[in-house]
Image (cartoon, rainbow, N blue to C red; front, side, top):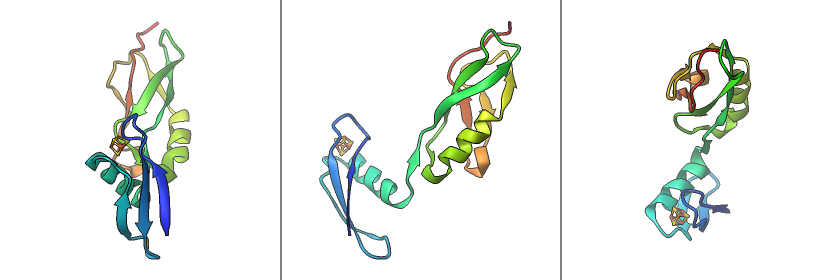
Length: 121
Ligand code: SF4
């Protein structure tokens, strides 16, 4: 089975074909123009993951929410669950860039960190 994917590791957007057997093992990869594309294709076909960006509620701050992101990519199948968990959180101001607002979210080993400040009101 050949799976065609678009590499998103850089703006070139190369089309990559991944030939896999019935056990899901990769037989060959073609279409990538660099090693990053090879790595992206392998991950995408065996353990797809995505970065997660959203906001978290803040109490006592000058803003009601602060933007956050996952420090690393989260397994694709857990993105919605992670987003729901983050939506249920409320942190206290002040918030600094890089503050961990959720450590090891849902046991993924990935921390959710603030990407902006939120001073106290
Ligand atoms: S294969 Fe390499 S050059 Fe092509 S999109 Fe991916 S990272 Fe960019």
